[in-house]
Amino acid sequence: MDKLLAETLYYEMVRGRAFEYAAKEHYMQGDISGFLHLDIGQEALSVGAMKAFTKGDVFSTYREHIMALARGISPKAVMAELFGKEAGVSEGKGGSMHLFDPSHFFYGGDAIVGGHLPNAVGCAYARKFRGEEHGVMAVFGDGATNGGAFFESLNIAAAQKLPMLFLCENNEYAIGTKITRVAPFEKQAKKAEPYMPTVEVDGMDVLAVYEAVSEAQHYIQKGHGPIFVEAMTCRYEGHSMSDPNSYRSTQEMALCKARDPIERMKKVLLEQYGMDDDTIESLETKAQNEIDEAVRFAAEAAEPAPEALTAHVFTEGGNHALS
Ligand SMILES: Cc1ncc(C[n+]2csc(CCOP(=O)(O)OP(=O)(O)O)c2C)c(N)n1
Ligand SMILES: [Mg+2]
Image (tube, rainbow, N blue to C red):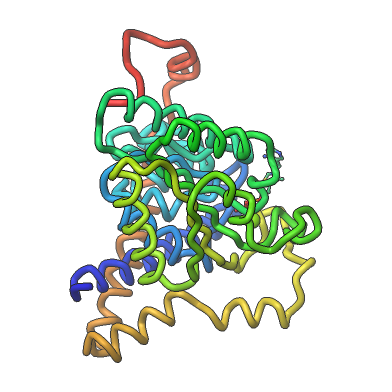
């Protein structure tokens, strides 16, 4: 991997984490309402996957701020969305769980666990039907693999040989429920094995995620049908802002943080790419400045007009997401 890309992956992870801490702070101050699910600890997965899946459509879960940023949506538009402002990426009406931007081929954020999977399959069907090269990536949690929509999606994607990349972010928890209490095994790829090839990757290693998703993208674009990638990861915060994370021991959290994806990549930059501490520090300062600016922008931005409340409720004209 060239140095510029390695540096970009680091920058995106640092910027993503800074975004999440700023969102947390402003949620606690009452500037952000509704639900807020933080992605701190899982940055390698969000950044590595988005940077690798360059051409194609992305459907994600509700823990998607960093994915949206790494996809190229501006921090200002994402922060303004969290603040419920008109300049937000979903015009302030979606909030944290519904960051939607067809111009970046990024279709949310979905509050229904696994609810986006059939939508992603429909999109993959449309791409194939039109003879287009784009593949579709759907990102979902370990908990989502216990739902019916997941199995239906695997089935139809495999039966129709659709260009679908199923990316499971296995952080071993669905809110406070350990995956092994509600599934018969730790690795959820087993559920996909009868349908398609499966790959496991260390979700705390951004380079490994990048490589695995790049290869999976090539695979689906060659018309082989779907593929399943499972990335083992770990979230540092509670499930959402209302979860104090009391079901995980101090020891479990320490083991989790010992795998920190940002520290790991920093070491790679220093030891393998010959980068010095000053350069790394200047990247970190630049990332923080970008987020501070996004917060200022969101705080000062206008509220949506009252008439906006009824817009986008029914289809107007022929606009749709696929383009
Ligand atoms: C269909 C449905 N069932 C239940 C919920 C409540 N719920 C919200 S998040 C969540 C846990 C999902 O866990 P996972 O898929 O592992 O994602 P993670 O939060 O770990 O990223 C549940 C059960 C929901 N939103 N939708
Ligand atoms: Mg989970």
